[in-house]
Image (cartoon, rainbow, N blue to C red):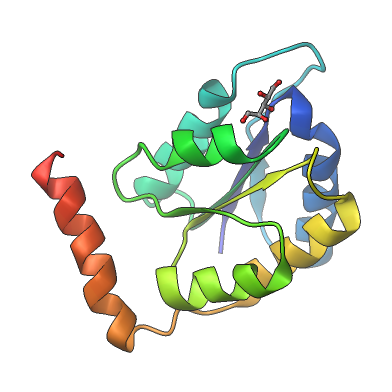
Length: 148
Ligand code: RB5
């Protein structure tokens, strides 16, 4: 598994925590910034990660901003992305099992680094269940393809 990560200025500390988690788990990753603490625009950092996951260059993406909301909205604009905004461990597991989410978004002004680490680890290590969920994902793809 290869993971692409990024944050805006509001998510730098959790991004650092996620880097250390990925290193500990021996999961290859690439960090797409941001590289400074001055104010940046979250779509500029969500887009490259989402595109690289959608293209298959990376298997999963992790995005952090102040609330996680801007990052999740941005990532979900990219065709093929199912980005879940998660702030608890139960949802981290369930969004893999039921939604096959391929991008995880979190907010650094919402949760601390310890919980973010637990969420990311659970999300990375949980599998999609398929079965009855597959027809729902197919409907999501149909919405995307219809251009609505
Ligand atoms: C930046 O101030 C903030 O708006 C951003 O990090 C994020 O919370 C947006 O959803």
